[in-house]
Amino acid sequence: MVKDYKSIGRITIVTNTKIEIKDLYKIFGPNPAVMLNKVKAGISKEELLEKYNHTVGLQDINIGIPACGIQVVMGLSGAGKSTLIRHINRLIEPTSGKIIVDGEDVLAMQQKELTNFRRFKASMVFQKFSLFPHRTVTENVAYGLKIQSKSKDEITNISSEWIERVGLGGFENHYPAQLSGGMQQRVGLIRALATNPDILLMDEAFSALDPLIRSDMQNILLELQKELNKTIVFITHDLDEALKLGDNIVILRGGEMVQQGNPQEIILKPIDDYVTDFTKDINRGKIIQVKHIIEKEPASSDFVIDANTTVEEAIEKLVNADISSASVKEKSSIIGSITTKNLVSVISRR
Ligand SMILES: Nc1ncnc2c1ncn2[C@@H]1O[C@H](COP(=O)(O)OP(=O)(O)OP(=O)(O)O)[C@@H](O)[C@H]1O
Ligand SMILES: [Mg+2]
Image (cartoon, rainbow, N blue to C red):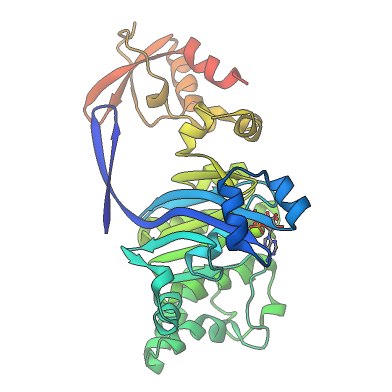
C-alpha cells in the first residue's frame, strides 16, 4: 500500500492510498490512440468532436483515494463521473493511464483476476438499483455470496443479518417490484456489502430516490460506514449530498479535474467560478468548522469552544453566552480564537 503524507499546519497525517488513478485519459471514438496525441498537443474538446468525431471522456486525471473514507466525485451531467468510476473496476478500459488498487495494477489483471477483483474487492451499487427482478430479497442479497462459494449456512446467516440490519426483516421473500424505491436500494446496498468488499463503487446510487428517502439512505450509509470503514467512491451531482457524505471531494468538469479537497476546502477556497457557482447556495454555517477560520489574537472571554464545532453552532453558543469571542480548543490545546464578527462574515460571504 502506498503511504501518503499530508501536512496540515503542524500536524502530519499519514494515510494509505487505496486507489491511485494516474494520468488517466479516455477518448471515445474509433481511433482513440491517434486522438490522444492531438489532445495532449492541446486540441480543444470541441474541435476534436467537430473535426474528428471523438469525445474526450476524461483528460489527465490524477487522484489518490485514501483507504477507509468516502471519496465523492461530483460534476454536472457529462462531466465524466461514470466514466471515471467505471475505470476503477475496469468496466471501461482507459485510452492511457494507470489504475492501481492496493499497489496492484488493475489494467494488468487477467480475466480471472479481474473477475475475483470484482467479486471480492470492489462491489458496485447502481442508480437504477439493478436488482434481479425474478429473485427475492434474500436471493438478491445471497447472489454475491453464492458466487463466492460460501456454504449454505453461511449464506443464510450473512444474508439475514444484513436484511435485519437495514430494517428489511419480514420482506425476505418479496420480489423487487413489491418494494418501494428506498427499500430496493437498501437491497442494492446490502447486496454489495454482503460480499464484504474493501471498496464500494456507488454511481449516483441515491439520485433516483425522493428527497426524504434519499436522506435516509445517506444516513444509513454513514451509520454503516462508521462500523465498516470501507473505501467508498460515491458519485453525485448534488453538492449537499457531496458535503454530507464526502471525506474528500473531487470536482470534474468536461472530463477534467477542477479541484479536489475536503468539504471545508471546497467551500472556503473554491478554485474558480465553476466551483464557486456550485457552492454558492449551500448553508456554509452548517458545514464549516471553527478550526478553519480561527484568528491568532487571544479571545476576550474565558469561553472555550471545540475546534470541530460548526460556525452555526458557534454563533448560537456565543450569542447565548452573551460574548463576542471565544478560544478554540483542539484535543487539549488552544489553537486560536473566533469572534462573532468573523463567524457571521463566513456565513454571509457569497
Ligand atoms: N460509450 C460512449 N461513447 C461515446 N461517448 C461517451 C460514452 N460514454 C460516455 N461518453 C461521453 O463522455 C462524457 C462523459 O460521460 P459520463 O457518462 O461519464 O458523464 P457523467 O458525469 O456520468 O454524466 P451524468 O451525470 O449524466 O451521468 C460525455 O460527453 C458522454 O457523452
Ligand atoms: Mg453518470
